[in-house]
Length: 230
Image (cartoon, rainbow, N blue to C red):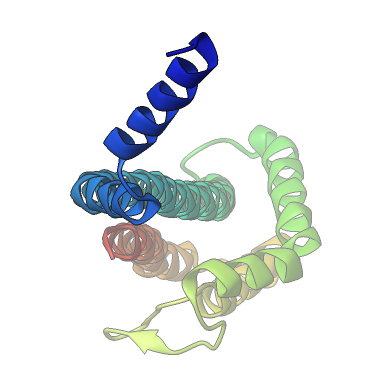
């Protein structure tokens, strides 16, 4: 047998051993069917992992943003609370000091007219009282407005027998005592006992108003803390 014949025979043999094309395709399909569940399970787990990762990031960002907004809201409320309390306390101190100064200088003038001190003190004490009297009236509308804003109404409603629960009523009380004092200044009265009784009776009203303002400030603090807790 020649060399060419041997080559043809070998080719035919290999083709015969390889089998028909349909058998090869069936093998490939069988391999694919065997491998597909493995790849399907892998991709399924990979997709679930990606979804879980994305959801975790979104949830973390959402919680962080919610916490940030809540913290910012509480910080703003706390700043507003501090500002309100500071302004209310400043108003209380200003009004309280002015009330104390005015009634104290009224008493110093009474001491002159009652003879407790000499007449040589009259000029200076009268000057001191006029200064606080002018200061009171110069700031009256401002103080009435601030009192109304921080502590409530400016109407002269009363507490107890003769004291008012607000600045407008205390102003009326100062006006009544001032008129009595003015009669001494003008030389139209010599009843120092009556003036002393009026001062003694009016003084607790000032103390009461101080207490009421401080109570309002305390209530403001409690209300703000409740709002922060909500």
